[in-house]
Length: 236
Image (cartoon, rainbow, N blue to C red; front, top):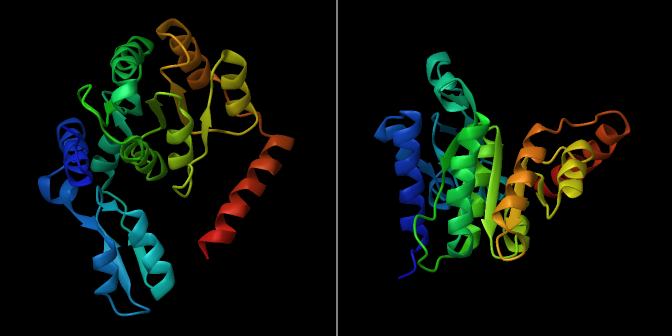
């Protein structure tokens, strides 16, 4: 049986509550399109630390002239959000086609010294990949995860979905060369993989390379800045 959007988000919130130690109130609060519609134009909506802000809410806010202010967490809470057990947090998610590879990579991330934050799915029952790409992308763009990884059958759809989230630069990688290029040249912060295209051994090599490769800066920084400028142009 396929999970609907509400069920997927509840699963993700449960993971956040358990892993990050957030209160139920902070983790479950969300700013939605309805929240923005109820606000007067020109006013501010404050998002408490750990709140979810839906893409439709951001779009509606731009149209109505409502400012969504994301309040910073207290220093002690911020430490929990950005790191688990003193390691870099990597959000990881998958649809049913990428479930088995996600499970394997989650264990591998621990071996490498990272803290995986599992965004689902949690079985091989059919689900929709955009839900999990969004969950991972939101954690990365909000700063609650250092990097993100999404796995589906081909990796293409999840890459498209993740790149719709402002601040995300998702890259589909299928070998070590593309892993290096996406980090060194493009400063990618979300990696997507196609479980139907690569095996577990290659996936591990890609993940290790992608996480350890630094952004090259220099001429590449100028080009990434132009990518960001394009994004900001269409957010107005």
